[in-house]
Amino acid sequence: MRKPELLAPAGDLEKLKMAINYGADAVYLGGERFGLRKASKNFGIEEIKEGVEYAHNRGKKVYVTMNIVPHNEDLVGLEDYVRELYNIGIDAVIVSDPGMFTIIKKTVPDLPIHLSTQASVTNYETVMFWYNLGIKRIVLARELSLKEIKEIIDKAPEDLEIEVFVHGAMCISYSGRCLLSNYMTGRDANRGDCAQACRWKYNLVEEKRPGEFYPVFEDEKGTYIFNSKDLCMIEYIPQLVEAGIKSFKIEGRVKSSYYVATVLRSYRMAIDEYFKDKEKYTFKQEWIEEIKKASFRDFTTGFYFDKPTEKDQVYGSSSYIRNYDFVGLVLDYDKETGLATVEQRNRMYVGDEIEVFGPGTDYFTQTIERMYDEEGNGIDVAPHPQQIVKIQMEQPVDSWYILRKPRKE
Image (tube, rainbow, N blue to C red; front, side, top):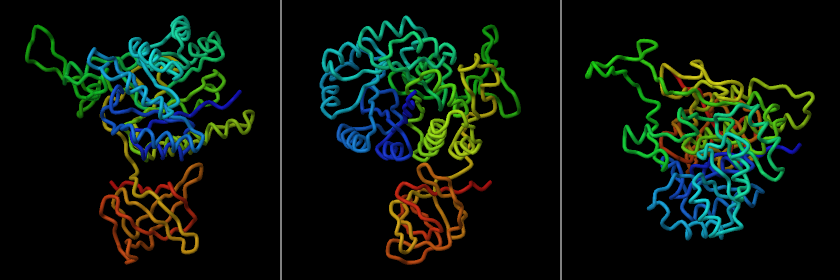
């Protein structure tokens, strides 16, 4: 059984490169049109071209999301856009709408098309419907159990790939087909502009008592009745692999590059460890503890093992838990002097205790003893966003290594 693809989100070019360097086999990204994440920076054509070249040079793939539920005006320019993507050499597009599928198939017949989770595929017959139309991969609905996923894979043709989400934020609506954002704010979630209205506080109003707002609360801070915990399946890599899933998808195109690196690194290590020796594989708690050093909500296994209950919701807050700050990204390292050239991402001081990690490596802890500006002058603090500094490192590092430090209460 071959390794599943580890598929990472890429909200911008830096996140794409971060994902590739931290173990992704493929990335998915959105262009400036037709995708479902307006909140991420997204990619212009030239940036897609650069991203594809960067990925392909390292043996990785790039998929472009075109999974909005389009209105008539949204289809204008689709043929020209998809031709440009095809000429750039992207590996597939991700769609949810039959009309967009039809236009893309007619315009560039050789371009592989993946079916988005927005299409809400939940059964074998629907899988076969899309397969017979020419779909190469299907991202199943998130409302399926692992047992149902395995049944679909067992019945599906061998050349059809099944992809599932294994980590990230969960939508309270059916496979993300939500009207709440549109109703509350006029921002259409199905056209890429979700306001995440499911994370807000709500009150209950009884129809015969207009103007009387009854709080729905769990404690004195209120409640968030639509607010799901985050999906996390890293503890169940063997079960996911044995089910025959071809691609493990991480959610998060609007998350930070630090989040992408941290989550990818743990999943990459877990998958690789399992394939070293399946019989002796044991889950390492440190993998999930590392994930918790990026922003997260409490975790759930979603629908994989049973239908979610009240235990899979977050009732006290819509905020993420953030225990660490991403303070620096290593750009270069001088083996002779032990000095790392670092791009600052959050304020750091001489005397700070930091953790340092890279792709596939354990982290180490050190104190910042000496720090210099670009002219070589000693400094006590790096306060400016993306300031370039040099830091004396206690162990060798490399480009794309990350510096983080615990948040102070």
